[in-house]
Length: 385
Image (cartoon, rainbow, N blue to C red; front, side, top):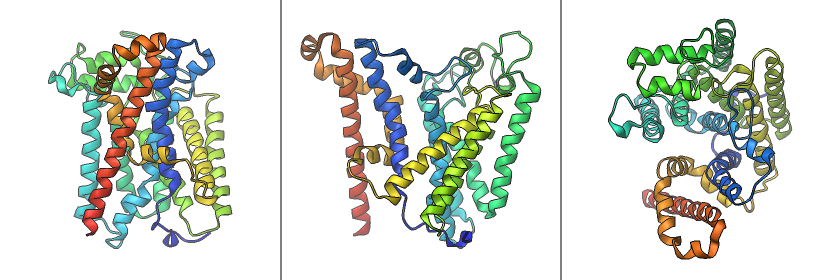
């Protein structure tokens, strides 16, 4: 195996944007269209269960969306942060930390905008930490600090330590059951979330009440957001080493197999719970993520099979724009579709109108991304002149 100094970071891997695009398309295209189709036809329950989150214990296809986004954020770090470091001889400078800070704040604020009810300007309604973008921001910031260390052993040790400490805290100080108001015991991550939120908000505030509604946790669970980010980072580091493709693929599949085996073994004692990202859920989710990235890498970067993947690449390259359109500006797309399609098309479509509306919103979203790509292309051309 070659040394880390021989990694190649000149060319971006096609598979990273592809997998990110597939993940985004599952969230903003496949999910809405299938939900709309379910209103027209009664689709198989097995399919619909995969497009819904379990109430507590379990693992469905929809559960993979958020972990895969966090994983892909880490997978991009060798091409973003490490490239910036290499321009300064491997040492972080002011420009590096400014980039990290701006990126962190942007993701955090967009997360507040999407799901934090910050526009209500009501402290009793605002949710300070409650969105996927904020989870990505947390993992990204800590990973940016770890990257500076330069030692791969240090990065691996910190990642394993966070995984082990979180697992030990959850297993020894909680019982993996949903916490009830005034009840005894409960999931330790949920109990920590309640304790932290109560430091800043009264029990009547949404930041406290929402915990009893969905049991999703963010504060203590930030440890796992870092672990997932670093899992993506390690996968890409394997893919860009100056060694044979055969060695890379064997290492990636062994990496994926190890994570899946770890998750499977841990699930004997630790329930698979996405709400609090238990160690069994995290290991399984990361195992699947590495496996998907390995397959994508083999097909697109090794065999160079890339035809017909333009739409996936579009959503992968502008994933943040697509996410904001779906999660924040969706009412605008719906309203525009209604303006275009109602009442004329509705009379023709009849009971199929929900499906027509979902497809119309998808077309509008794709058009926005095409415009976004064209704007970026023109800026790039102008900067080169």
